[in-house]
Figure 1 (cartoon, rainbow, N blue to C red):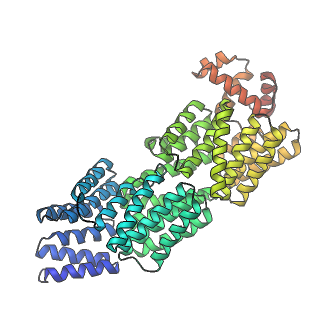
Figure 2: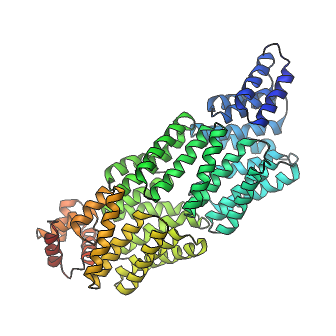
Figure 3: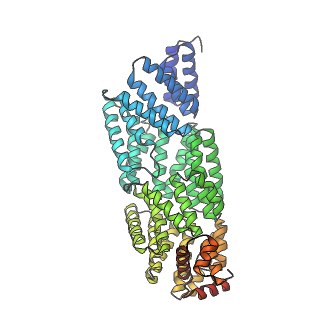
Length: 541
């Protein structure tokens, strides 16, 4: 291409970008640069490299384009390259501080300039990186409103479609699911209708649709969009997006009890990220840790998630592991840390933490705070309306009612939870709810149905491959005990006092006392001696 006119090559490269032929565009822009170095060719090369997941090349081209635009005294174009250089640092290298620095540079370059599309794109970039469980939906909506105004004033349809989709995700996170999904559906219609100038932008729109469905626990709808995104990512040859759809599809498979398929899908996602966006491999590792926790492999789950304990998903995952082990203080601390980083406007981001908080608070005897958490969760479930969230609210109410001794009310709530979990095809949660229900039925002196619920739960756990949980239910009977509770119960059976147990386990006597109280409640035993006798009969001692 060295003998071809560089202006012709520039035009050809831009046409190839419009057609989605990234490799041809890359070759054309490289040919133009070989003939004559110019900012426009560097910028064009950066878009082609971005679409091909060539992160280092994209960043190199952005920085050269920025340098040349600055020399040409073209501050708006330089700002465009600065904001995208920041996005590349974030996506390909995980360098958040560097990304913020580039965005701040873009803000300074655009300050006082006449309205241009770059003002809207920068508004999106200011909240793009926050589209996680810890986002502030109010802040996102402010940014997207700015972007929508700019898109209309500057006739930039790509900016408008992305802003619409991002606002929809923020509304869903805020619990306004109907309003949010309407915006996301409209953005998806624009994508499917061919309104985008750059085809690559259909991928983030589909991404955010999947995120929204997952947060609302609309698993059926999420699966459909995962399939559509997978096809689009393969058609556009975008490896990172293939990883994203696989990672989130794996989560759906985990919820539906298809654990072997989920594990292989997570491996595929990790391979995609390693080849394109290495920082994203952290999320696949955390999701694998969450699967291991469901399987009852707590040590492995903790080992996988602990290196990323700063990540919101890992915070909750490690809190669940701590709760399963009976380490209530650790579990409470992690949930509190998570909730401190989640604004009140992110209602769906708070839902999973509230489920855990209710269980922790009932275990520690803080029924007032448990009731507050259960009420907030109920309000979120009512606003969203999906069955898995409603089931979670019923389960939390049942756990609280049982802890307060309101067994008939607990039975009703847990019956509703089991039914909702079963209808939403979430078998692990259904099994856990059945075990809790079995304990309540035992307290109500309905042993036949208690045994039936336990057997059904055990069969489900057996089918899923939940080895650790299956072993506990097979020895401890219908009321599920945590590993720490079993450990303390064995020492109680040896006649040790709370102080002696605390010394042996290096925990406080207060913690031991709390565990013993919960053991008596779960076993429906009136005294320590009765609990020890029941444990001996069950084969725990």
